[in-house]
Length: 113
Length: 109
Image 1 (spheres, rainbow over the protein chains, first blue to last red):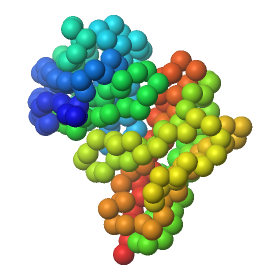
Image 2 (image 1 turned 90 degrees about the vertical axis):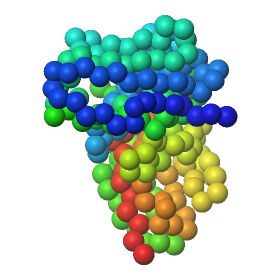
Image 3 (image 1 turned 180 degrees about the horizontal axis):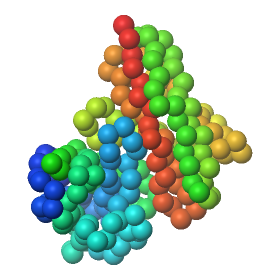
């Protein structure tokens, strides 16, 4: 069974530029999560989708971050414009049901200069 | 507010046993997870507890006491490859996952 796929693995941009990350969850997993993980900290939930509907986006900085999951499968997370404090690893995870274990992708490491 | 507490860092010797503690204060409880995260990699699932008691899985065991808001992860026969961060996460009454900051475990020969 293929795991959670993410791209790109690494991205370096300058502040005020934009960036987009892509995630393809495990086939059949209805729930998809985007997390931000800063070095030395636990993951921070940005947004959770159930199929193509948003379950929780309370911690998403909506003035600069956006995410979509149009067909209930893969998802994109966009940052525009980026700030220095957005430097982090962006982890995508999926689960087959809301209460099940999460399977994580390898993450996208963003450096904002 | 909701909170998960874990030690920031622990050091142990190869072949020994180490216990990583996690205490939580959350609005409701619907299960506790332990994940392992090697440096530069994604977290991988280790264990899940929803009832009180000990769950054993090979060299790793996880314990839960819901009345005390407490869990621990026990690692036996430590190997160098066990050097990683260990993340505790709790599902609250809304089925949202609350994550701890993780415990960095350093294994010395």
